[in-house]
Image (cartoon, rainbow, N blue to C red; front, side, top):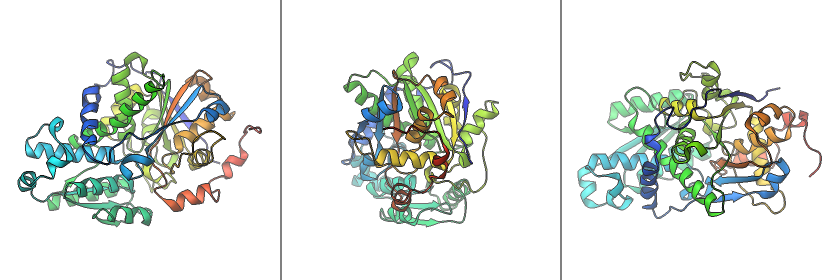
Length: 414
């Protein structure tokens, strides 16, 4: 039976003592949020408060940032893709992003100066749809490559935004290499949320785009009288999302930054493996990367975000698929009085791991190490809604990925 593994960061740095956080300062995050506001679809996503689940699990407060409402696209990814494309367009036009808007990029003058631009990327679905949507909003083209095993429903969602899209016979990391090669051959612009030598600007802009989510979350917590969370759980694929949110929280909160826990699927746990090896360098995992958590099926860390995650995260967790399935069911069938949160397989793993840590005997060591108790104010991010309706139905309606749950020590009373 697969089990949860974790590594504690024995050398957590204080903000200012580790990797530079300037790229994720309040000023940079505000620029990103202001650009996002130029789209008519923009609105802060809800921060759901689940007091009954918090009490049941034994924590003080529990908040879920629900990204299923983001721009009508059912996932957070558009924050990074739209801002990176905006920064690229601004640079091409010699504009300051602080003065740029969606409307300005669609003007006749901008169109004449830019000509036709084609954006490309590799994706399991959500990021590709985000790139396709952002390109469509600006009257540009996109070509999207998906790894083998991708859900055809996600493929059609991408195509609905005018993209040329296909499912390849490659794993995610090889699909990224394909997109990069095709960009070079055709003069396209690759919009990928992972960095490599010579390709760092766009991944940085993507991380800055993700900081909008963290900025919103802090504002929403403060609006209900909570100065800051004590614990934040973030999922990682290549680590760009986790690095963007953690980096902003560290830059904004300083010594008051929360304990941040990074969660990955066991078959695609490059951040966990890098932390476990412990030499300070990012390390890749290989293979098919087949996991229920398709949006997290990435084997090679973003080298920019890795430094932030290495220095400022409190713990790193590698977990089997049933943890995510549990989270999906918990959020979709809440305790009476709590709101429903429709969370997909990559979105729900943070709730699932919190449930595991707080309810099981196996989770006790990590629970104690993280000091999770009745005084904790926990924020998790549900990064996607039911972007794969088939997977959501199979897990929530038909109970797939439950066998391991039946063997765990769980509370018997509600």
